[in-house]
Amino acid sequence: MLNRRSATGLLAALAVLAAPVAFAQGYPAKPIRWVVPYPAGGGSDFLARTIGQQLATQTSQTVTVDNKPGANTAIAAVDVARSAPDGYTILSADNGTMVFNSALYSKLSYNPDKDLVPVTLMGRFPMILVVGPNSDIRDAKDFVAKAKAAPGKLSYGSAGAGSPHHLAMELLKVNTGAHMVHIPYRGAAPALTDLAGGQLNAMMVDLAAGAGFIKGGKVRPLAVAHPARLPQLPDVPTFAELGFKGVEASAQVGVVAPAGTPPEVVATLQKQVAAAINQPAIRQKLVDFGIEPVGNTPQQYGDLIRSEVQRWHKLIREQKISLD
Image 1 (cartoon, rainbow, N blue to C red):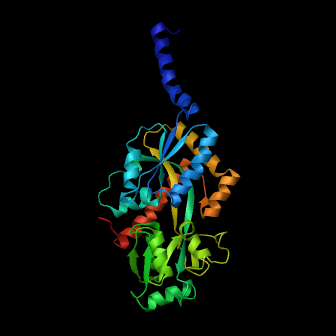
Image 2: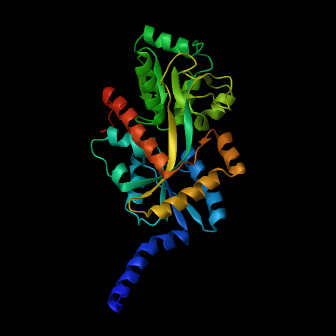
Image 3: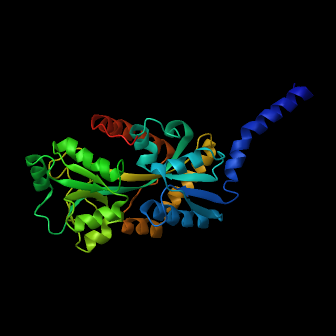
């Protein structure tokens, strides 16, 4: 039989154990701040605003997108990492945030493994090899053959050093033995403009950034760095179809929260974001923009990050790529 002191202690312990569950059941009970590490108008911003609007409808809570660009996403990452771990400040994190940066910089202002926890991968932006409209390069095989025949003669642009566009082309170089000169730009748009004008030979670009140029005939797609053909470009083959195995790359954008966020809150947030992604009108809107919708579990997203770290850190080391 319990005495009063023991009973009081037991009730206190049960209250502590029940608190996270009760907190999760009431979540979200106030507005959510969604930090995006890029300026308004880009693919990551579109993804956050599109899903955030649906999330607000589902939860009856305001979702405010806060754009904090700079330092290859590190400024936004530090902001969220230092925020209260309660699920009310979340981050749109891409490969740069969670995978590339820790290999590209010898000193990083945040630790993606220790400071942030995965919630869900929202979507992928598959990479596409494109050339200018007047290029004499016929297809991807011809491109690789020309790059191998004249090492260093062909140039390729990217949205910036260390970007998924840059590293996708480095992956192609490693897998084919081709050698090309990298010319980094500040964003995909100026690189595409120079490619269309003939100042560059090629680049890797995601459909969200390059759709207007592709549809307008300003650049010509040769191959997609994806396991399957894209529904928006059914006539463009994959690199695997052409015999180039392992050339798969995409910008991957997910939601992460500060380390220490209760697992129950993470689970609730994941379910709400996944439900928003799978809402038919939202899903179609993402596909039309050039995004492959996902909405996986925190475990699946975490496993993906770890496998991507192994794959890309090896490439970055071997190619001696650094942003220091």
